[in-house]
Length: 270
Image (tube, rainbow, N blue to C red):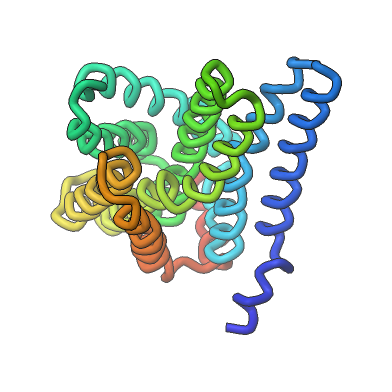
């Protein structure tokens, strides 16, 4: 408990503070100098602060960062996240109507499916079929997805009435929430799926995998519904409970991973 209270000593906290400070500094300089060329960088650092902090915290706890080659993780971040956003955006436009508020509850099922496609594609090649590798791939994909989605919200706010300062506020708030939403939902699914596939030595559909996916999709839909639907303000605070349950389930699913075990698995992946 004492170590948890000293969170400010961990590098995930240092990275989060540094990226948030850099984002707001870029926004402040842009406002003062009128140099809009700084906006993309400001939005990127603001959107990435929370997800990167969770990645560092998870790696320090589990060692998943060394379970997959760095270039593979980079590719999953850049292209896996982009593919997931492409699939999710297309299906959202087809299945979610702005005129029907209740259709927001479909987004969880759509986006969790989209984010699972890139790690699944890697698993189908027969490589990186370990639990540590699966969590690393899933978190990398979800990080790319979450950062790009947050930046899209920020640009939309700039074009509206919020302006640049409003966009920065949105990025800060999403930086606090996306680590306990997009990342942990995808991480939960991949932890359960790759654990089963590691044992079997191949990709297969199992009841625990289906259960993990349904759980993540339901939590995602609940989170979206609490923030978007017209419900009493006090009820919106349940969003925090959903985030806490989401992270707890992810932590529970990955608590058996250890840094030394993940490192030992790396040579077998060559």
